[in-house]
Length: 176
Image: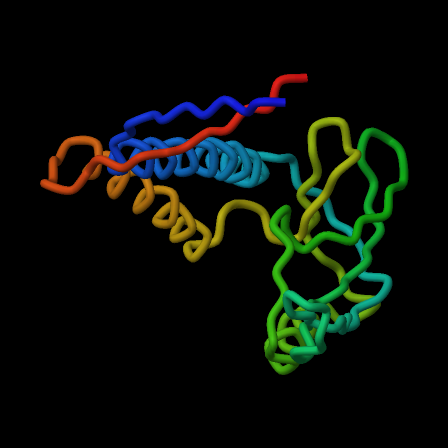
């Protein structure tokens, strides 16, 4: 069988620029949707609840090849609350779960909610989801910088020209 080769001249800046622009836009849309949902939790109705348990969860952090890199920690707080005349149990501090390599941080966070204490519980209008810390924390907005940078660099590549932008891509086809 004879193979067929085709050569295509491509502008490397356009390919990389479009790639960065598209990746940046996809990540930006996903982040904005998530942050809007988290922000909406600050408008949820609030009721008084009771903390059932307050602990720290530990899990292994693994590298690309599955090798152990250390431990990650997160506060785990469970609580009971009533919404719509029904009793519910929740386990989320916020809609964005945070893990840290600092066990002290996780202990401090769970320490704000000792077992048996009364807490303010913010629940979704249907009562199915609840958080103790509604809204978006200031640091979460920083995640918008990542897709923003990809969009800016991608756009910059698309709007500029260089002397060595062209490259050859060879595509080989084998007829069936």
